Image (cartoon, rainbow, N blue to C red; front, top):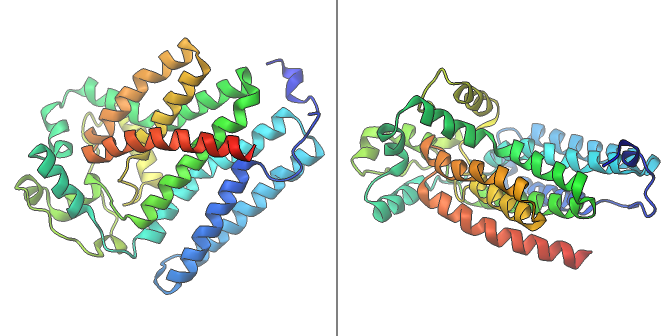
Length: 318
């Protein structure tokens, strides 16, 4: 794409909100209703309200800039803002679901029934090589960079489908967030520590009730602690990880969608670049204690379903 095209005025600029902005506003409204219902139990209600006001103001601000200069660059900015806010919406799911009883004991029991063990507990113990640890951590931290690469490709090479690709990813994210709010599962890194790894190894999975209402300590990330990607992963977890969002794995689900969007472009280079990271992601989520294997399998299935459903929704509204 030529630089001049970035500032070329669009012939038919969108006057109202984009589909990605409407879906975000819809999610905001839904969570406000949930907040009203849970108001007395919320720990940070005022901060949550302030965050939503800021989100609305920023969305309207970039919309206003686009109306003044309706070009590809300002449209890109509008979509980029919605994608960047995903990292703010994620810990917000914890604020809404921690008032509900934790369900990890159910999912850990299912895991034990299916596999006869806890793969997340054993994987890093059985494969503890430093180089392998770095591969796993690299795969996991590639999450948002892979989305950025994909959307930039669409923006530069397939601009007519850029908003659709962004909508598919964003709408799928919000679908996962709704599940996380209603299904409070924290995943091994939080549950194993709270329950005690000795009990987990013995196949005992206690019901922790409302433990995560006030606790969010997690297990240390396994592997080579001096590794670059290990340290990057720890920084990311320290900044935004919360005891939430385990089932299904959105890391696996969203990267499944990224792969399907890459396949849609028929670009061998793009698909070939993304696929190795996708494979690493599927294994890494279990290796670093982030997910049970059943979370990964559910992430694969829901990723495929969400891709086709959100694509149909976008085509229908268009």
